[in-house]
Length: 193
Image 1 (cartoon, rainbow, N blue to C red):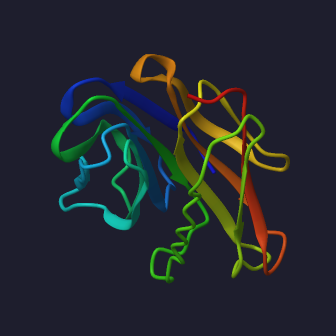
Image 2: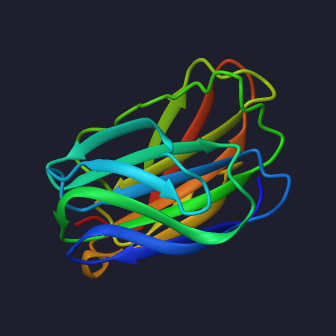
């Protein structure tokens, strides 16, 4: 896992930010968190590569939160702009990009989407990825109705924003090497809203 970058927006129909892809990068992962649940992610682009990134998943967490993940294989190296285009204006959103090396661009990317639903409680959320295998890199992105979140034990926080929508929503991307057939990804919440 290489360098990362992120951007936050309020009341906009797109999120765009500067990012650098170094030589030797095999893939660019983009995670997105939105406040407005009815807004969808329509495209994710890297300004130095023609064509769009491929959507891995987009999930509705509640009526007011959404998370999504996109992947662009073989991105052109250099400094450019990542742009996330939305179907409508969101009242708050954030997105981040992570450079990945050692990824085989022609291999199948297993996209898991486990959605936590229920009442947020100070404590946290644990989500098992039940078909991982040793050697996999598990990437987790999520949006939570909480003032702050912390990536769980064994995970590395890559980007995080605890100030979405005036500090009432938090979002982050974390990674963890797979530990076998089931890898648990978790976030600890400090408070709820």
